[in-house]
Length: 295
Image 1 (tube, rainbow, N blue to C red):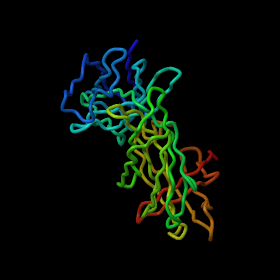
Image 2: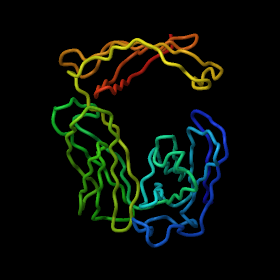
Image 3: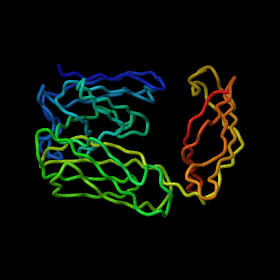
Image 4: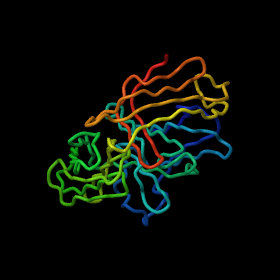
């Protein structure tokens, strides 16, 4: 049976939301790409999601099951755009999407937003070399993406979004893989996506994170505090007040992994870094990734 469900998740929140299924294409023949790619094997492959005004959701989980498709697109008012934060489970036939305040679409855009289920070829995996964490100026990275298409043999067109406002297209791909290279001009954490199509049939895109760091950019030295509003600390929703933090992190000469510590003084406990993965500094924007533990 075809089904679609939505629920609040992650940070909770309250409000009213509804999911509706269409009996046919609600956008019409002027939509792009051609909606013949969308699945109607188990009925209509079109849904909409509506979040009522006054709702305070900050994270929603959408699940689409038994659609006959593998991925979701949403009508952004101009084109069918790929939905971010999605995964497909072939064992259950379920597409799961996490919608947040910054996803595509965002929670604020769920005002009767139409979704379509696509069932064309898919990207099975993405690998990036030399690695998913590279030093700025070390040269271009190489992407290899595997194409999965049980019902077709190509040729394919692959569209690559490098996450830095740069895109590329590989046309007339005859094999089950696509390769491309790209050099980044600035540090940051980038999400690479690859979408593959065969004629008018297009299917899943796989997202892969990539971090570009500059070991000579400086260090992350901080000591201060910020006000945490009521309900923001989910382990203790009744808490409101100052949260203190401190950090001293940098790249040693020639190192590819940063060293140092970071500490956040939470109510009744401290959260301390146990292992660092990367540090990016781009102007006043600093990002640090790693694992930690409660002390």
